[in-house]
Image (cartoon, rainbow, N blue to C red; front, side):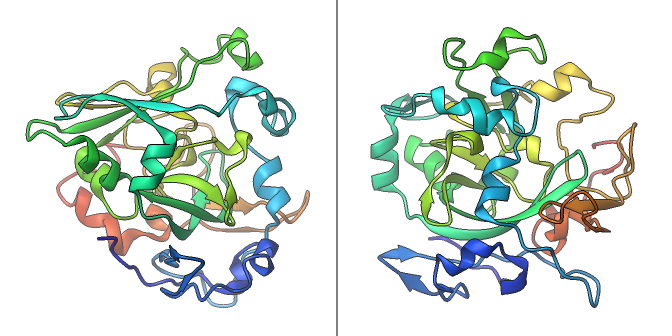
Length: 303
């Protein structure tokens, strides 16, 4: 059963596409047969602060997806080559029912909800995005987790014929990510299938991507083709590339700077060249919901 969280994001903090959704009673309402949940973002912004509204175009035209190039507009320009039908996800490792799961079968078995989440990039820019998707916990339950599982490893598709960016050794392809099991099982952690009720665009990680809203965006791995349950901490792409700059946990923490820039504030996408900066919130504003996961950890050492 999906857990409902208080929504503290206001209509003016959501992008213009909210009109397309017809103000869908995001406070736990339902429409068109979907269980829609306006999922909370923890503490609000400082008094008098508003997010600059993003548009659907902002969200789909300003992306990091290095398999299609390192420019912010490269994914929208080149990701149309990605074939997303048919699509399967291999689920293996410490599970009772390993195998290839067809995307269509996964969707049929899941409850799709709408989650309005803050999105914070490690590059110190941010958006507010209304995702459609389901809890990762439900997918893991479908495969049957074994008691010895402690971590979840995820892998992005690697298709050199469709992904021009992988011709360059920007990272060690394929892109891989991982979560501790309790992070993966948290109700805020979802597998996104859409944005604004539309199928998720290729450049945003079609047809299935992870979204972990209290972590920097690169943890939210795109176009997932494999999920492995394991008892050891899995490697992650950016940590392999530069462990000094990119830790395994990658929780949003304004008190821990990136070695090359401050993380104390962020630039809100949608305001043009001189878009305003706002203070970055601890755990991206989800501190109340997820801080207990790290109660016994030094969040500076375990960045």
